[in-house]
Image 1: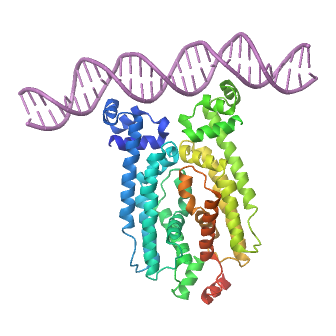
Image 2: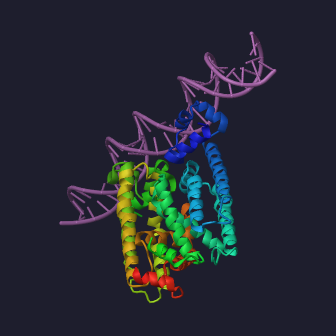
Length: 208
Length: 208
DNA sequence: ACAAATTTAGACAGGCTTGTCCAATTCGTC
DNA sequence: GACGAATTGGACAAGCCTGTCTAAATTTGT
């Protein structure tokens, strides 16, 4: 494991103040001196960790957004699949959980560092996702008023049942992710879908 | 300010490891010795802080749930009002933000302490809220499949636009709270509200 | 194989923090 | 005013952590 990866793990587990350079070095399998040779001091190492996580998370998010179903065959199934990919590859994975925890714990102490994340990450994510939803609406698959609002609500809905797990830093099971995404997409489509499906399907949606 | 309140503030700002007893004492306006006289040691003080926050937050949540609009005059306006109260009095206030941050930062280190919060807090909140929504559905104001899912999604929706602010530990403005609640309730009602325009759906609801 | 660069282990100083002890002072109550 | 309880300030030991230094060992490039 690289020094930065080990540092990410320890910073997340122990917090910045509680993180111990000796422990990071041991976890990375190098000597303490090597850590100092590479990164100067603790704060510098922390910045390197956040930049690394931010870069990888953003790359993952945009790679996943590229799989958004622009021409859906089955809108509900395709959106559920997209939501599951988003959760699995960006939000629940190691990088996503670590970055989230560092932001929550140290965000107020490093405003400029996390302001960068904020602009590059959520800002662009929402905007890119809103564009995709606008396109679906334009193509007649959805009835959306404000695509930015719809994008944020989509993410909120498909994560609605995972909040507690995220809050405690845990990793939801594949089944939990799927259930939350399914319930979220169903409600999203109940609100924004065009309802041109059959009455039988409506009945299923209403009861499920 | 009481010792526990000052400790809550410092633990949240600096993290458990970074919190300094001298600073807590100074912020509370007492001597360090007094802190030790009252609470024994740092860990003990931390536990006292979490218990205090948990108790106050839960009380606030259930007081607010008691204001749920069981007989709504204007369903949309009443739900927005409820959502704003929930956010203002339970989630955005000092206690709510502090408790959330402590859970996120130290939850994994004190599983038994936060398991208590988890059962008494979110578990009962969701369940109580689900019962209120079920009642609205029974009275014919909503068309809900699973009240538990609807309750979680309601909370997720009305907070959808506040996520980033929460993540960075900030306090949203009254306008932001109102806008997020309004957008969330509008979508919630688009998904679960009764629709006079859809005969098929009406039929389904009549049987549900 | 040799030389340069990197890594390692360990010691070390300096600073900070926790938790204890104690004498002096203040406070609450009668 | 008096007396017991609580609070205060300060000193103090012990431990931990950061960051530096050095000399030896190891790896790397040629």
